[in-house]
Image (cartoon, rainbow, N blue to C red; front, side, top):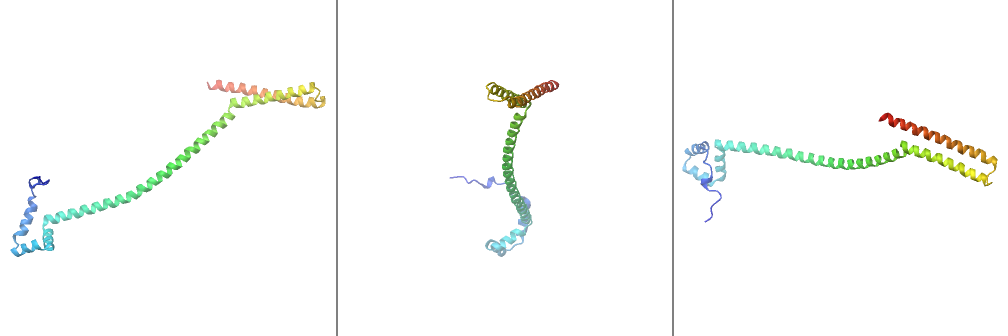
Length: 187
């Protein structure tokens, strides 16, 4: 024989106020009224809900139901707000990803620009251009010696290339010296 999960001995004793309220209400009932209570569900329900402890429980039940409905309503409102916030977060994450990508591209461009316009890069470019002028003047000199270039054409071109070479080398040396001084000033 299996034991029932809820035995009468497991239940707490009934509240005396509740049972006293029922007994007081039943004291003045006739046998016919008892019969009607047992057979008519509507009358039984009206009788039961007219007892003070049951009315108190009904009130508590209706208050709790009202409170739960308010909580459910608030939760539904907050659910839509949460959905909206999640959507906003998704949009922000997408925008943030695009912004980080753009930032990375801009930093890369900045690094490229800085490498092109750094002091050492500019000094190297200036030195390279000066050496190019020296090389061009050497080519003119070899053409002149080989007789490929007349004196009237050689002198102005050669003078121009050598002047350009010296100007660039002086600028290169001045910039190099200046950057060395700036380096030592910061150290």
